[in-house]
Image 1 (cartoon, rainbow, N blue to C red):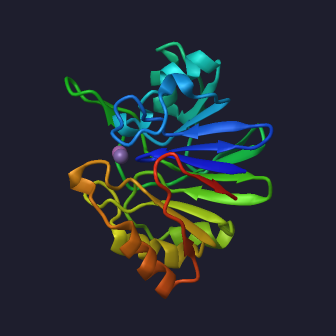
Image 2 (tube, rainbow, N blue to C red):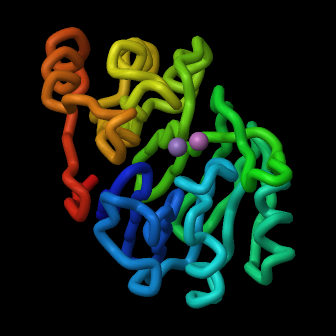
Length: 227
Ligand code: NI
Ligand code: MN
């Protein structure tokens, strides 16, 4: 499969049969490597309601007649705005095209708006199983010990982990996440979008590859990885 980084926490996965976009924050994303109207997608996976993740999901769903796959409260939010939505919750899995998607825990929040703030349930991460590969997309999260359980139950080929700090894990905790998950490969995300999450991914790569068996692949926005 092809995995393309579209900037911040947005990834596009493509097999011959299935096209998935995760956390499609594009129109307001300073790193965006695509415009929302360019996205051709069957399924839109959304980890939580924060604008840098829910982003352009509703518009992309409508233009593609695609389905948003997300936490129940976010699914309702999207459905009342006219998008097709498939509601799930943490621990559950379901098949979408070539992929089975399982929702994982994430230590974070999930809300949208300011006056008032609308809370949108629990945030999540995703395990994606497709073409014999397992991808763990952590979403926005702090470090948690059950990452060890995720790695033990589902040998991970690729872990996509936030390293930006402030809102999520920083590089030191992401290193601990790699030690627990034991993935073959790691792609960092959610950094350098704004100054507050400025990080050096080369330094992260150096320490992770020195201290673990994982290969770290740094993707520039627009770059594609073959898995
Ligand atoms: Ni967030
Ligand atoms: Mn975020």
